[in-house]
Length: 137
Image (cartoon, rainbow, N blue to C red; front, side, top):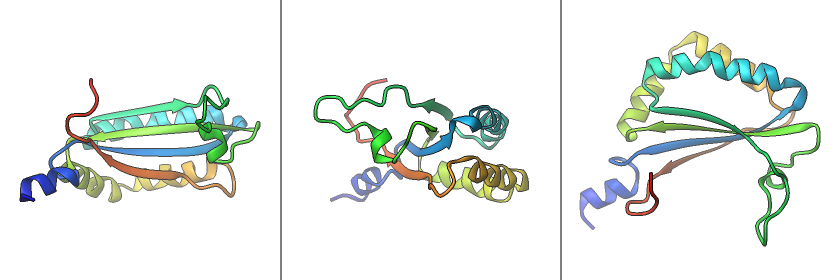
């Protein structure tokens, strides 16, 4: 396998998406919206290409697929949220991450995030690289 193909398969030369899925009590909805609204400008400033936040709608299973609300153990008092952050490539992700890790305001916002999600829960996280030739934009 060539070095280029290996690098592409590991997201070094392809776009990278960070995916976060978490639960938050319904009573914290407005606070979560405010928190995400505050960090948008910081993400832009540091170069995140795209930042999107989604809230789970339907919690019903579909065909043989289990709804994610069951996977993250959501109950009727919780909302399930998903954030997507997009980066050009691995180098870009590392550059942005280095800037954010040194930002004291982002550390405080991160702590507030942990205080707003459902107590005892954890934020699921994944780093995904695009598979060449699959999908459309």
